Length: 171
Length: 186
Length: 205
Image 1 (cartoon, rainbow over the protein chains, first blue to last red):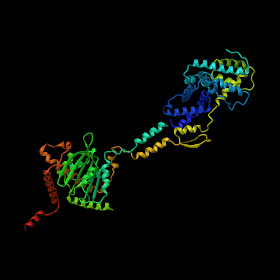
Image 2 (cartoon, rainbow over the protein chains, first blue to last red):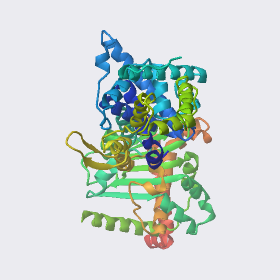
Image 3 (cartoon, each protein chain N blue to C red):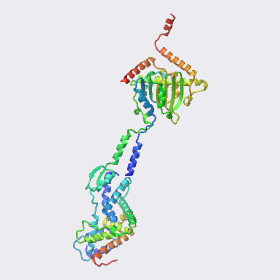
Image 4 (cartoon, helix red, strand yellow):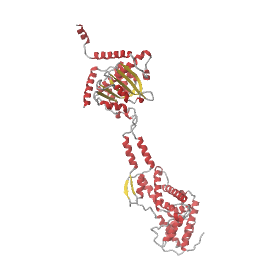
């Protein structure tokens, strides 16, 4: 794969990778560094890239693994798994309405989800991946994906409704 | 990054000159050192010239000569006038030669003259270089180097069979060489 | 779409059983400003995910930084935070190879026609020819002068090449030399147009 092709076909993936990395690592800088890492790794495999069906899927897997590795080593280094250390509340430029707090809360709750649920709800509800695509990245069965997606979404709902103090029927 | 630097270094290393090759630099150095000097005659004839020989009319008797030449790549002669050199040219050359690279084929001592034949042999037994060094009080002070596919058999036949076309030509040659000497003094 | 249908979809959604299409419908619906009160809380839910999708890398030089690392040559500086200057490593490697390529010689190179250390002394092939003859004959003569005495001792045919060290010859060699010099002289004389018979005749006179 030439640099030109890489520019056109691979670089544009960067934001998806970024969002996923940030989902795990929370920090902007760390997420950017990870994406850089991933892209360079992709380049190092440039001879094989053209044979891969989905370069994006492949890249997402690498991103996921890198993030999980980083988190593992972080967890080893900190004595306790501290919520505040890993979850930094940040304000997005889009939170301009009274929903600002709610948005942040949702972000927080998703970032605190178990890894599987986290990545599944992220890939589905943020990136719009089909179940097959999610299966490709996570290596999970579609059933497992559905179950985890359901749990994750319900957790988000729980948070929102708690805030709203609005009762709603649950399954 | 580290990998790239390492492979760059390896690349540069392998690109470096291979100094020890078949036409040894020792002989060339000797040649270079003395060929310009007063009282020395230097002659080089190489394959490019050999190839032109086919255009020259020769007698049948020169078949051996042609055969001898066919494998040759270069002949170098460095000859000195008896008076121009202090001491023994032979000794000088022997000092500067990388003797490990050569096998002594024959040494002839006679009154006032030493002659040594050295060869460089390849793995298949073929001779790739022949050196003849002669020195002494006589006027035959010379270093002759022949490179190529050398067949001593054929060469030794030459003294019997070769008919040098016209000695007068040789005399003219000597005159030419003297002229060359004059030129080289400039 | 009425809110009952939406409620049905929502249930499906939280069970993880909606399709992408249906989820898009939900998203569209909840984007509206006017919503039934009991569904309002879900607006933020879907809002969040729409917003999250727009999040991007903020560094404007990110792409170029990657390309530099890969090897595209470019020079630029940023807001002071990171000055990034990279030269194509491939380019450097290439120039090093080219420079050293001139020195690289295989052992066979010097035997190559084009690669002689010295130029031909003669420009006239005929002169070169004669000189080559002379040299080879000279070598041949000298060589044979060392070899011939041995012919009496042992048989030499092709075995010349396996000749190893022969140490000094003695007076016999002198004899040989005298003889070969005689032959040289004889040749010299016979090639010159000298009327030897007349000289002798003159001497007799």
